[in-house]
Each structure stands twice: as C-alpha cells, then as structure tokens.
Image 1: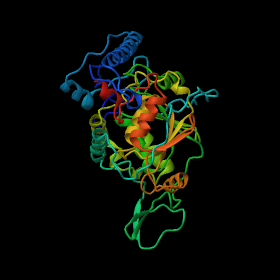
Image 2: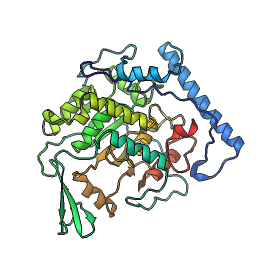
Image 3: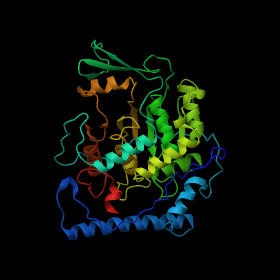
Image 4: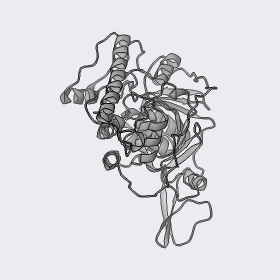
Length: 418
C-alpha cells in the first residue's frame, strides 16, 4: 500500500494500516458507564487486553511466515506514505476489475441487547457536549480535505423569507429559511437499483476518497469493514473478501444492480460519477489525483487512525449482526468518529448520506420528529435508535464488546489505552 505519484497505480490493500502500530501501556482503563474500577481491576483488564492483542499479532505473523513488525521511525513512515508499494503475499497484481461474487446472506443473527439501564439520550443540535480532542482533530481533518464529503453534487443554497412547504428540509436563521437544492433533488442523476457493497476500512485514504464521492453523489452504501486490510490481524470481512475475490485489497466495490466489481479508488470514483453522477469529467480534484491521496492520508494521521485494526475486545460474532444504519455524511466531525467505531468493531453497517443538498435530510427529520441532526444510529439488533456522537460510541462499546469497556465520554478506544 502506498501513497504514490499519480503516474504510479498503487495497490490499495494496506492503506496506512501498519504504519502506526501501537502497543498498550499503563494508562488507566475506566469502567463502562462511568463506574470507577480499582487500580487492581484496571491492571487485570489491561493485561488481558494486551494478551489478546499480542496473541493476535503472533498468529498473524505466523500465518504470514514473518516476525512481528518492528516499530518504524518517523522518516521510514514518511517514505512509506510517499513512495511505498506492497502487495499481500499470495495476492495478484492490482487491476481495475475483480470477480463479481456476492457474499452469502446471513440468516441467523446473534442475540444482543441494549446495555442495562440504557436510555436514548436527548438530541441536542449544534451543541458540543464533551470529547473536545476527538472533535477538534475531526475538524482539522475536515479542513485538510477542503470540506470534501459535505456537499452533494450541484449543491445550491437559497435564503428566503417564506416558510418552505411542509416536508421540505430547511434551516431557520432568524427570520430567514435556508434551503438546499442539488442535482439529486432535481432528479438529474440516475440512482442505483440495488445495493452498493463496499469492502473498506475507515483509516485508509483510498477508501476515504470513495466515501467522499458517495456523499457527493448521495449514494447509500453497505459497508463491510476490513480494519487494517492485510497489515493488522485478519478480520472476518477481510477473510471473506479474500475467499470470494482472491485479494484483501480495499476499497473494493460491488454494484449489485449492474453486476460490476471494481478495485482501485480512482476507478471506483470515476465509475460512480459516470454511472450515478454528472459524468467522470466532473470528478472534483478532492477525490482524484495526488492532492486527494495526500490530503486523505493526512486527515487519517490527524485522526490518529483509530480504526486501523480490529478493537481487541470486539465480539467475535459482530460480523453476523444485522447491519446497523447510520445517517450522516463523511465530512461531519460528529459523524466520522462514529464511523471509526463501527469499523473498529467490525460491524456491518449501511451509511445513509445526508450532506448539504441531500433529499435524505427531510427523511431523517420526519423519522425523528426533530430538527435535522446527525449522526443518527438505527440498530435493528436491539431496536435502539439514537443520536449524539459520544453517546453512540459509548453504546456501541457497551453492546458490541466482550469487556463492556468504554471511555467515560467517548473518544478513541485505542488512544485511551496507549
């Protein structure tokens, strides 16, 4: 995996996964729900999580016939970012098209319940309720990406004194109403006739370009998370991808309506714009070429790459869960940490994009009966529907891990252990 000049077509299998390997240290682990643990309990839990992580790394190294990765210097990491190229042993050389093979549907799902005493939080639009470090780094990442992943293609804002028709999304600004239009709301773009399936992981800069394009084209996508994609210990969806399609390379798109399978982020973005957008000649520079690659990679580094491998206490049956639904958009500093958490837990999920100019903003407001606010999570496994970024991440940790551990006010799981 690499970041390379446009003249070189990178294999996108690894997308930064191993460059920033971390080892647990002596940080204090807080109890789920905010109940304080004793120092002895903290130490025992920390040792258990460290043992799990070490065992996974040893198994992964044995499978690859290599020794555990040695921590790289900052200069070595920079060289990999700019010039590196590597292909998973046993895989084929990169190509645009892959085999069109659909994964088998899951008919039996594990039982999971909402955490004891759980109550969905009150939604508080446009209010910051804590976890400032995560929020600020997500805001910096958004600026690095020049607000890509926030606006639908052809977005046009309009201010009016007149109240819009009932059911139309609008933001009230004093006596004025701000409404949106776009190529999608005007019915100018073709829409998929069947689901789009994307194998990816959140910290990959190549995958981020594809997710930004999906927001810009207002395309819902079924996500099969593959944290690390070959550099971290294998995950179920990474193994499924290898078994069905012969490689661990991500991003990998399956357009089930047109029976198309594609590798390589540049090809996927061009295909989406050509098929469901205004044409591949209109792909913005934020989603193609050297700038897109470097800015997306920098954004991942700014975020600390919290989803570059599977969370060590993620439930082993998370891949069998019914897919969760997340309303949001890639550029939102409140939505992105939730996406990272879903990926690091290996949970299948469907992202319903709600960028500026999306028709789905009205849909979400009608569903909640409240002013538009994202992220909004719908969990068919427990029946929970909820908003608020921090509370969603805490809920996911408590419901979909074996330890029930969660940072007291959200945040990155692994950064709290290191």
